Each structure stands twice: as structure tokens, then as C-alpha cells.
Length: 442
Image 1: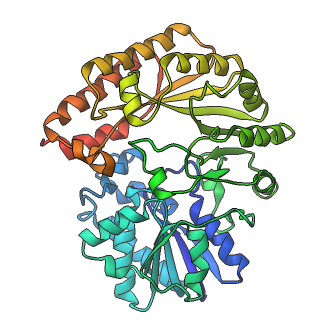
Image 2: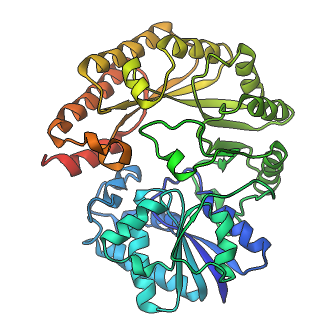
Image 3: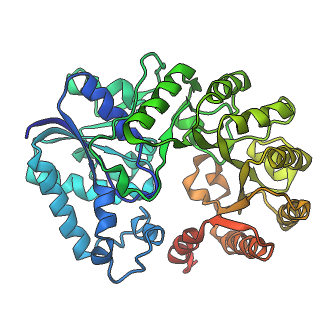
């Protein structure tokens, strides 16, 4: 088989839902009459995890520690490197002109790193493309490892625009920064090369927008996508119906930063979705000043099952510094509406923010306590996350390992408090594993 391009999904990702980005590019390339295929190496690793990681805790999420870019615990794993060589041969058997790796997070770095080395060693003429939301930081990683020369093209921004230019050899620049994109044609992800039944949930990702209207200090979205774009409602419905008719899937996770970024658009989408039988969850922002009660009813009628809301802190001082200006009363009012219309909630909190004091931390506990006392009928879970300042360029000036222990202790205390209050704790048990590995010496 001779392929123009082979798209590879590399470990480590979760195995609940397939990654959407390579499926989108796979669709674009096929529509332009190139020979292409999508290879799911992440699922390949999952199916062999007991053999590959026999000396480790084989729980899939806990293996994240091994894939952290800040260490190289995979270097001594002989079974993993044998698999890398097998994957390399699998890729070469397709005889692709280009191999494209999608880097969604830092957990993909090592697999792409080792595969790039093996591919270039086996066939120096093969061309390697890297893109995705973490492409910029992967570039830095490869530069630090002195291996960036292995990458022929790295696309930072919209790969939808550049993938065909690369294949036509109209784009010869190694580092491509593309921030210009408009939703003109409808692009429906193509998953035909992977077995969706391998995944633990019958759910697919869905994008109704790109970027964010906010610029929160701890978030990189506005740096990745500098322009906020809304996808036409008719495109969204066409994709939903295609996934239902093709894969019999009617349940979706929205990739949007927040579903209620532009209320007229949210209302239009929800009014259309009321006529169908789709269910979905999404990220959501507290916007009480401009939302009305009927908006929550509309979300429910449209199939919204769960909203993930970034509360971050119970302290107004901390939230103001982050760029979030809603009050605790706004939080409680939003929960009242969600409770009334039976939409489940995951509340997300950040611990260890650089301006957070012990008093701020107590305010977070107080807010959780207030929520608990309301005794809502809906399922409310909490995601407690520790913030790594060294991963966020805008907060690096606060980096101080001297107070790391205090900040991380507060994170552990919040987890304990949530547990005693009988809230379902969504995550991050694996985060504690990372920290224990990375910072126990500090």
C-alpha cells in the first residue's frame, strides 16, 4: 500500500472517546483525493498495557506518570521500546510519504519523540508532520532534546488550512503558524479507519466553536486560538445526523471552551436541537448578568445532560486575578436553575493559584459547604486540580518551589474535605501521582 499521508493517534490519551483532530484532517485529505489512513496507536497500547507495563500499576489513568515530559521513565521500559519498533514497522508497511502526529497534550510527547527517531532512522526520506493544540510546546520539547530537525513541518494553529498546502508542497516552512480560519465548508470527522467499539463509551467529541471569549490567566486557549469562531448550526446538525446514521451514536462531548459564549448562538443551536434526540455535555461559564431562567430550560430541552463549570475558587480576590468576575451568589443562583431543570454539574476548582492565601482557601471550603447545605437533587461532582505554575507562561513569575509544599498540601486538604462532604470527586487522583514523582525531593 502506498499512502500520501498516515495520521497517527499516539499515546497517552484516555480510552473513553476517540481523538477528534486527526479524524477531521483525515476527512479533509480524503475529500481532496489523497490516499490516507488513520492509525490508532493509543488503543494499540491500551490493549497491550498489561504486558508493556507489567511492573507498574496497570490502571490506565495512573500510567500518565510514565508519559510526563518532565521525566523519562519510559527510557528503561524494554517492552515499550519493542512496541515503538513494531509501530514503526507498521507505519512503514503503509509506505506513506507523510506521517502526521496529533499532539493533544504533553502525554503524547515521548511517543512522538521515539517514533520520529525510529522512522527517520529506518527511512530518512519519510516526512513527519506534527500539529495539534500542544504543538507549540512540543516544538520546545524537541528543541530541548536537540531533535527538532526530525520534524519536517510543525503546524501551530489551524491544521485544517495547512494540511493540503503541505501535501501539495506549497508549504515548505518547518514552523507554520496559522491563525486564519473560517467555517466555510462543513468538515465531518472521518473515523472509518478505527473501531469505535474499542472505546469504553459510545460517545464522540463535537465542536460547535473554536477559541474562547475570555482570557483567563491560567488558561492557554486564547494563546492557541487567537480568534473566537462559531460554527454554523446547520453544519453541527449535519454532523450529528451523520454520526447517528453511520455509527449509531447519539451522545456527545462538546470540545468548546464554553457553550454559552455567545447567547444568541447558543439559543439558536438549542432551539434546533430540541427537535432531535441527542444528549451532550459541555463546558459552561457563570453568566448570570445576561442569562435568563429560560436559557436553562432550553439547555435541558436540547439534550444537555451535564455542564462542567470552572468555579476555580471561593475567593473573589483569586477569581478577579484569574479574570473571572462572578460572585458566589452567582454560583448559587446558577445551581438553583440547573437543579430546577435537572442538569447535572461538575464544578471545577483550582488549588495552589499564586495569589491564593489560606484565607482564600477557607473561602473555597465555605462555598463548597454552602453548596452541600442546599441539598440539590441533581448529581454534583467536583474536580479539584492543582495548578502547575511552570506550565503557564503568564504565571511563571510566581514560580517558587519554596512554597510548593504549602500549596500542594492545600490541594490535598481540599480533596479530603470534598470526600468528607460526600461529593463525588471527579479527579485528579492521577495528579497526586505526578506530584509525588516530580516534587517529593523538593
